[in-house]
Length: 53
Image (cartoon, rainbow, N blue to C red; front, side, top):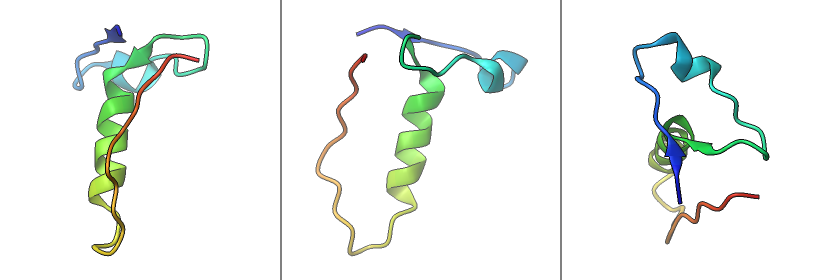
């Protein structure tokens, strides 16, 4: 699986296209990790699955 990698300090980080027809971005991965870390302690996330639609 290929990801588009943008520098988090560049304007491309926030402006990268994130629709179903676009490649996954590194920002999508980071957002998922932050989402998981922000869940309450009684919430169990066993795995993440990334797939292109």
